[in-house]
Image (cartoon, rainbow, N blue to C red; front, side, top):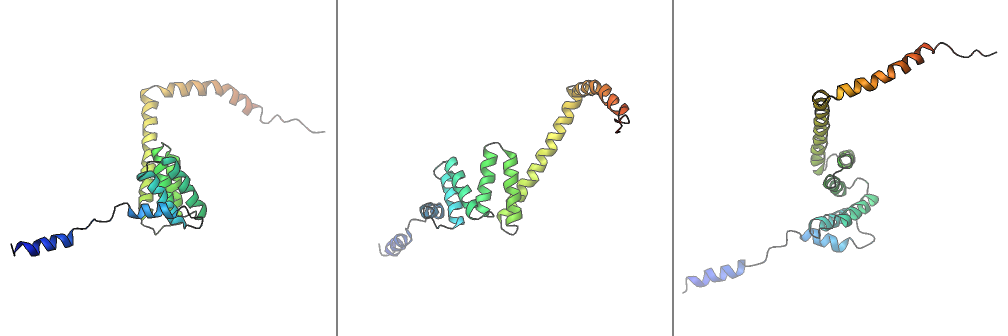
Length: 169
């Protein structure tokens, strides 16, 4: 029994509740209600709204407010990047990523923004490859040639009359 007493005492001493993994976000959500809250706190409150409360509209509003206070706030730009991608707007995600890389190039989140830019470049390449595939395999080249063929007489007429300008008297 004497041997178990120190172990029980040690177990009781170590028995504590670890801090919540969302503690920083929870604190930011409470502090963001102040009118003079820093943009970083408002941006973290926006993450709280998205990740904890599952309110993407509120998260977008808070991120816009953080960017109004500081246009280069990396956390707010990252959240805008995520929300734009979530909503299916790659151009919005690319815009936020470019603003993040320009505004805070040494911030650790700039690496994620650079990755997003690289992925958007890959999307553009795959879109071009798909268009080329469709051009050849679905006969889009025939439709293009027919459309171009209807404009050839118009362009030829414009070029032949190019030298016929009214003479001023």
